[in-house]
Picture (tube, rainbow, N blue to C red):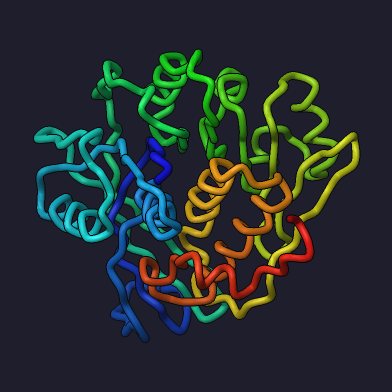
Length: 294
């Protein structure tokens, strides 16, 4: 069983499907509602459902919200011994409204976290590492701590990404929005070449229904995904990163890692229930064409 250290934000999401995004001060009736964990917790669930073991390093308050987060993560057998259980900080949570087109309005309640993670762990026990950038100072310090551990390190490059972080990782995956923000380029090939001139790290860009991209011998390669009817895109990126990290550790080709991750994220988007929509291995493999990306 692959042991994966996952560092990043964990939140509780109150998700409501509505006819239209609220615009006026009024009462709105939800078509459907669910309560789910989000962020790095989402990536951890994806790892568990493929057969890995996620060790989540996050901040979870000792409040009622934190109790619900812990219960949902314990139910998925996620290891929380590397997470901070805080008396000082409240747990993060969000209220999210999603309309029939998949557009969403998100209201966050998230404190500015200043406390330091414990850097004295034996990081050698892990097979791989996954980071989001919600706690950038801590992310960078852990990356420096494990610099000489020769194991895969994946960065979810959405916000707060720096070149120093990129250079300390083996793999970096940008969302298209994060990629444009970081490079200033809307053209994926141009932007990837710009970053590639500054780093030896493996670089990828995810772009929803368009699949994912990477450079191979100066050519832009697009790995597709499956066609689905979108219900809820929330957390798709987190699922993608969790699955990609697991597939890298299974020594699959880059094309297979991207293809598998694309399909997993698409399956997640095809269902409204945020947690239950994270696929298991057999759900993903129903869509896998083994004749390609072997």
